[in-house]
Image 1 (spheres, rainbow, N blue to C red):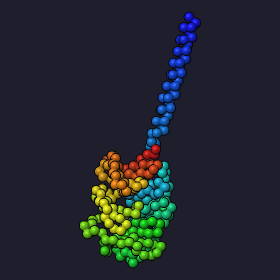
Image 2: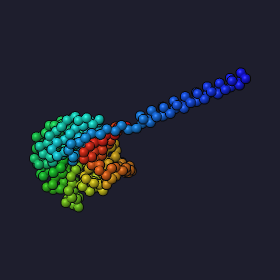
Image 3: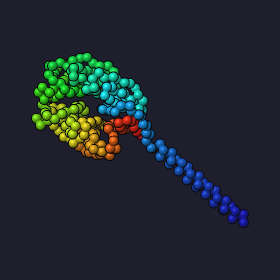
Image 4: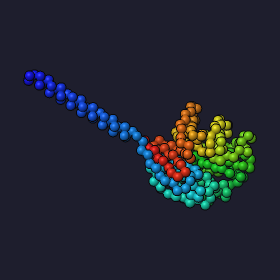
Length: 270
């Protein structure tokens, strides 16, 4: 009898140990799964966004009709820039030194957030500049409507380093956005993105929407219907993901995903 009781007692303790191990395993798994779930934050917007920008550290800038609102990576408002002209081109770059171009009075420059440069773009660079973007820390690309050309200006040397003409079939197309990235020049219309080499060769044409695009590492991403399209700029591989139909803009960094709607911003962090 005593031997039998010892066996039963041993079995009972073994079952308790197994149950405890199972409980610990489930608790640990739940904890890990909870940590793995992305955190989501929603920020209310009082104005409908017209354009969205990312700087290199990952902060977000939302351009509305008359102002640009700066948010940090957690969605906290970090500053407001009241714009005298809603048509300005803005590029936040590293967050401390930003590029600005006003196509109406032809003023441009690199500045800090909230300050408007007063330098007038010399006609020796472009007679009728309608678009401009930064080209490194001391250069700019200009779209000159007078001769349908793109010019890369070296501001340090005060000279045009590169110039090429827009293909004739694009000259009547409303190019709304240009940007340099990884030594390529990107020009976007409401329905296409054109990728040029630094020497003016047209490398690729993409069907896109809204003249809206951005970059994640070596990838270009852009909107096409309810899909966000990705193109690797070096190996040519492509991927895509679905987005909600009412999404206006999507911006992605290594740490955050910003989904912009008419009345709110959703921030997803890993």
